[in-house]
Amino acid sequence: MSDAVVGHHRGIALHRIGAMILRYWYLLLSSWPRLLELIYWPTVQIITWGFLQNYIAQNAGFFARAGGTLIGAVILWDILFRGQLGFSISFLEEMWARNLGNLMMSPLKPIEFLLALMVMSLVRLAIGIIPMTLIALFLFHFNFYGIGLPLIAFFCNLIFTSWSVGIFVSGLVLRNGLGAESIVWTLMFAIMPLSCIYYPVNVLPHWLQLVAWTLPPTYVFEGMRALLVDGVFRADLMIEAAALNAALLAASFAAFLALLRSARRNGSLLGGGE
Image (cartoon, rainbow, N blue to C red; front, side, top):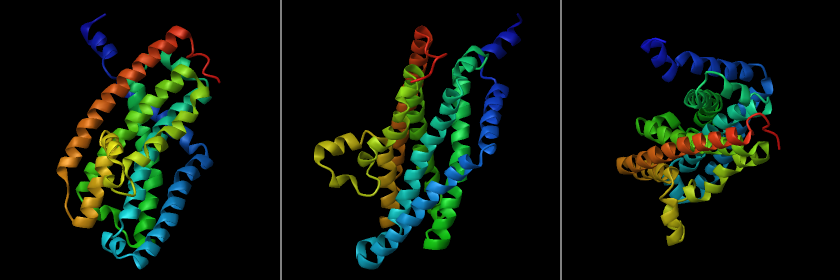
């Protein structure tokens, strides 16, 4: 076998990643309920919280000055939650179809599989978030894209966190079967109170503040409030969040590979049931 062939075999093959992305794209397009679900829940969220924001703005001076912190928080939370859910749902499609064993026996590498899931999480996220931001603009006059360049830092940090959680919970389901599926839907909500989405960190007890500052989303939501309320972009918060995300992504990759090896040893790849 030539060195070129060996290098191609050992490296990441874009055509395999593209094939997986195409598979999930066709699955998405083949079912209108899947597409509707991606748009429905973000739309309900933004309408519900948007009217609440209007009520608060009319009755509280601080929130009137805050100028959309509630709507901004809702959109950023949806990026975090939908990013993780988009990743995990594509993974669960393989579990539900009992196809994961076939994929793991193919030339597809685990890293290529995860990269394909990351791309699909962005696709699914865009389908839900873009209508959500347009509704926020036309119904509630909140221009999410008006945040400008800081939005890139907010988005990247939230999507990296969502991928870290998605990779980790996918590994747990891979190892323990669909009996552990509920963790896909619940883990993000478990960290929601400590991410300080709708309130500042300083409202928490001191010991919980220490825990909150170990979570990258906390830095993003604090940064959003600083930008919308005080007009200050906190680059230091974004850098700290990025450092934490780098550590989380590395740990989640390592955990997924360890859980995959364990699943192979225990023969759970071919089962995947309850």
